[in-house]
Amino acid sequence: MKIKLFITITNLLKMRSILLVFLLVFSLSSFAQWKSYKLTSSGDTLNRVDKINRKWGPWKLHYDQVRGEPGYEEEGWFEKDRKEGEWRLFTLMGDLVGIEYYKWGLKDSICRYFTKDGALRLEQSWRALNPDKEYDTLEIEDPDKFNTYRTVVVKNEGAAIKHGIWKYYDPQTGRVIRSELYTLGKLEEEAKAPVTTEKKPVAKPKEVIEFEKKNSGKKRVRYKDGSTGG
Image 1 (cartoon, rainbow, N blue to C red):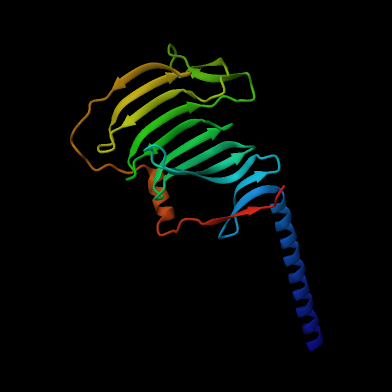
Image 2 (cartoon, rainbow, N blue to C red):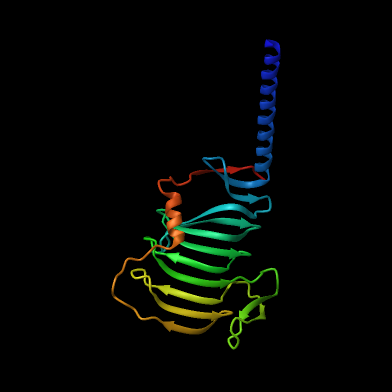
């Protein structure tokens, strides 16, 4: 009985050693595909650059204060050197001040910006055009027919275009003080909402509330540089 138990324990130790070696080899091979990267304290990789200098995966970008403009940081995702999906903007103190969305490396959809206190101050509406095409298509609403859309062919100028409603908020009251309607980059109409001097409690946007709950008491992520050469 003792012999069988000894053999079983020995086999388990061997299996564990083999598994550790496999994980180590797999980890090294994963890192080897990157020309450079940064490693967090939890072992995750950030700011990965492949062998042909393309950014991939989760990234954190830092910008110092320049000519009176405050510094800030961005966190989001790269695919083939282009920003993709949700990107979050922070002050250098860690306050969430913006949520942007990207497609093909260009702003797309509704982007929101906040004060340091978490009050919504601006909403922008963007449409990204596929930079790999000379022409792209967009669906726009027909002003003469409710809830009817038509397809428009647009020459690609290599940048996102303003498309939709832009709203400017009074952070003190939460009221819209100005709105602009853009169609394919053209300002169609501008309206001003009545401004009130009465200050009322303003509810923080849900994105800010969720961010504060998720990061309450957390320390900022630290990382170190890593490189495989190349």
